[in-house]
Image 1 (cartoon, rainbow, N blue to C red):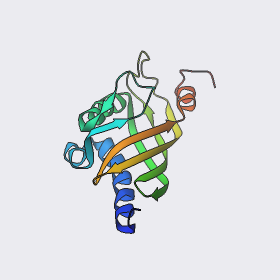
Image 2 (image 1 turned 30 degrees about the horizontal axis):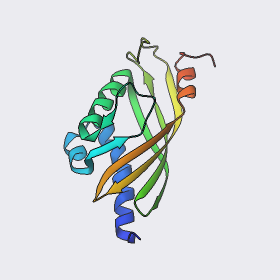
Image 3 (image 1 turned 90 degrees about the horizontal axis):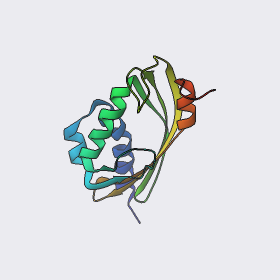
Length: 142
């Protein structure tokens, strides 16, 4: 059983992850993301491993989307896990895969489940409304 202080530290680390991701804060990521971290995401064309993988993912997403807001709505923390519910908002302002920028705004729901180990983020399971995102930026019919 994990003590309350550790659970709250885990919750804060999960929340802080989104700011570090959006600003590509290498120092924070190296201090708080395990080198063995894995993002369990089958929708990406590459594997996201360790702080470097998170930075690579940031390059991809921050190159495709601007005016990004990662608005945390709720968190649930228990033992070594933290679930974060947020709204991902922004503008499709750069290439996204094979698709050129559309300039369209989007606002989609995201759930991210994190597992912590030894004071660092060890794993992440994202659930993003990818269909809603693609519809809102015009890649799929609404």
